[in-house]
Amino acid sequence: MVLGIGLIVMGVAGSVLSSEVVATVIAVLAFGSVGAVYVYSYLLWRKSQRAAR
Image 1 (cartoon, one colour):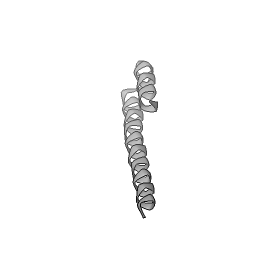
Image 2: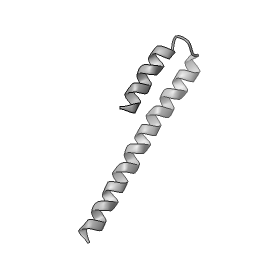
Image 3: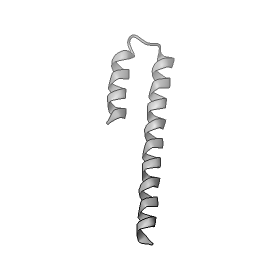
Image 4: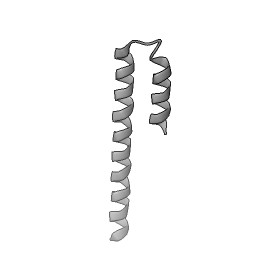
């Protein structure tokens, strides 16, 4: 959801900011959201491993 809002904001701000800034912010948002999902998935897996013992 945060990624979607960030993309909408960058779409609107794209007319004001340079394309390099917009591309950088979009890349940071995308990689950050992928990283957050990866960490969350790992934490859920680790919790399920502890519960299985």
